[in-house]
Structures are given as structure tokens and as C-alpha cells.
Amino acid sequence: MALVREIGPITAGVIVAGRVGSSVAAELTTMMITEQIDALKVMRVDPVKFLVVPRYTAALVMIPTLSVYAMFIGLVAGIVIAQGAANVPPDTFMDSVKQTILDRDFSVHFLKSIINATLIIMFSCAIGLNTRGGAEDVGIATTRTIVWTMISIFILNFVVTSVTYAPR
Image 1 (cartoon, one colour):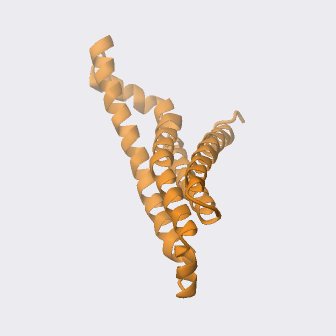
Image 2 (image 1 turned 30 degrees about the horizontal axis):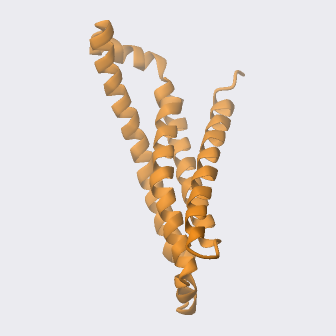
Image 3 (image 1 turned 135 degrees about the vertical axis):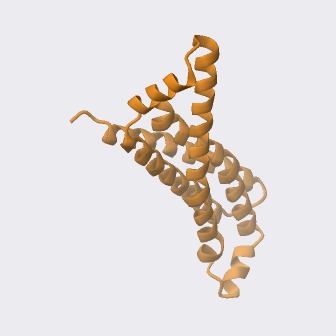
């Protein structure tokens, strides 16, 4: 249950924030510092449409996919551990999973993945496109992106869980 509700979306979000978010922030910050963004504007190319929209689209597709993959790997690992450590047959384990996990758990899982994708791209692009200065500012922007993204992922996942699973 925790795997579907919390661990899958948060794990995928943190991994992607660390890898992709930092990369996007560093790339866009470097483009700002080297005035490549200004060159796009001179050529009348909208930097948001050209640089942000494709990244956001890719994140909306891949982060939920990665999150489902993490959930699947976790379930397979659970089966292996349950059978190896407690001698629980896979059928019994899966019956227990089916009884424990609600249909809305999958919807909430997907919602959290979409929120995580939005947060990662929003922070990495906003910070990357609004950084000025020199080479040392690339590292500062990258660190700022990671910190803000991860804090936001944990807070919004907590809020979604609290609202969705609050006793009525």
C-alpha cells in the first residue's frame, strides 16, 4: 500500500529531480549566461515554446511511466522477499495486495506523478531562465533547483495524501 501511495511517486520524483532537474537548470543557466536565450529572442523564437514546452511534455510522459515502473519493481521485490523470508506464496502475496490497494490509490499515484513532473520542470526552467552572472552561478542555480524541487515534492505529496486519505 505504501509503495503505491507514497514510495513510487516520491522515489521517481526525487530521482528525476536529481538527474533531470539539475541538468535542465544547468543547461538553461548556461544558455542565459552565454546569451543564447537572447539570441533566440533576436531570432523571434519564443524561449518558452522552444526550450520549456518540449521538456515539460517529456516529463509529463516519462515521470508517470517511471513511477509506475518503480511501483512494479517494488511489487516484484515484495514478492521475492515475502517468498524468500516468510515463505509466502506469490498468489497469497498478490491476493493481499489486491485487498489492500484501493482503485483510487492508482489515481492518486498518477496525480502525484503529474504534480512531480510539473514541479521539476517548473523549478528547473524558472530558475535556469532567471539566473544571471557567471560560471559560478550555474552551480548555485542547480543547487537551488534541487533544493526547491525536492522540498516541494515532499510537501505537495504530503498535501495530496492528507486531502485524499483524510478520514471523513
